[in-house]
Amino acid sequence: MSPRILGWLLAIWVGLAVGMKASIAQGPTAEDQAAAAKPTGKLDLYLLVGQSNMAGRGKVEDSDRVVHPRVWTLSKSDEWVPAIDPLHFDKPAAVGVGLGRTFGLEIADAAPDASIGLIPCAVGGSPIDAWTPGTHYPPTNSHPWDDAIRRARRALRDGTLKGILWHQGESDATPELAPTYAAKLDDLIARLRKELDAPDVPFIAGQMGQFVEKPWNDDKRTVDRAHRELPTRVRLTAFVNSDSLGHNGDFVHFDAAAYRELGRRYAAAFLKFSREP
Image 1 (spheres, helix red, strand yellow):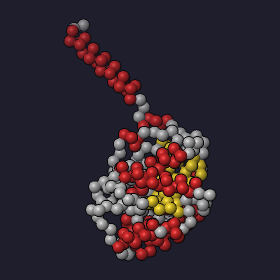
Image 2 (cartoon, helix red, strand yellow):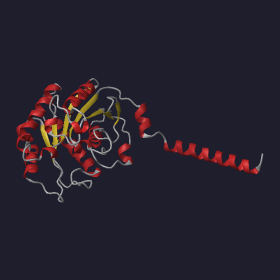
Image 3 (cartoon, rainbow, N blue to C red):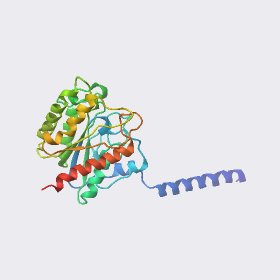
Image 4 (cartoon, helix red, strand yellow):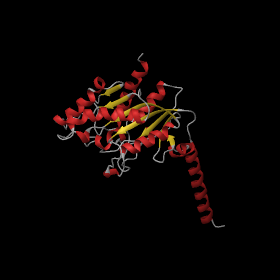
């Protein structure tokens, strides 16, 4: 065998060895773990509903794809998989880090014996009127209300609904829609609790982004007031502020760090319910 052929063979062998070593060192990917893992036991379920700031538009980093053994999400195909970002799939080209995964991690840390099941159902751009039975939302070719109820009922086979997280309102901040937003929000909460047979489940609403580069108008303030005053109108509800949170450059959506902080704030608001007598 010629020295040239021997050299080629040696180079190929070294390349294969290095590749195998790197693969072993790297370990299974998040996708590998997600495909192999399934939850055991009953889940504490949380429904994630609203529009794009609930779905999440933050940049995904490696830390957002680390698998937690007790935090799960219901996939687009209605299967439980580990909760790695992005959780949502409303607009595949745009989805990213949201508040849901951090919320789940915080709740799991506070309840070490619990397994958490997140039910992502937010639909980017959807006004609150799209969250009514039978309503088709053309931009995503979906039925936000009907899809959320169906997915929630699927999830309920594997656990108990513990909370509903809502972030929505930008699409209703118009002169025509803002004046009736509070009444529609109260009705939405009542319908969700009735349809899911969960009259005492906490409902948490988050504040729209407050960005100095894009000051609010009167319509935005009207929708914000509906969110802020929710606990005075509807029992077992909470309001989460967006103070000092940054945007991703479009003056509408939060950045990834802000979404993670918002998730922590939602978790803190929810945990207050469990501590109250």
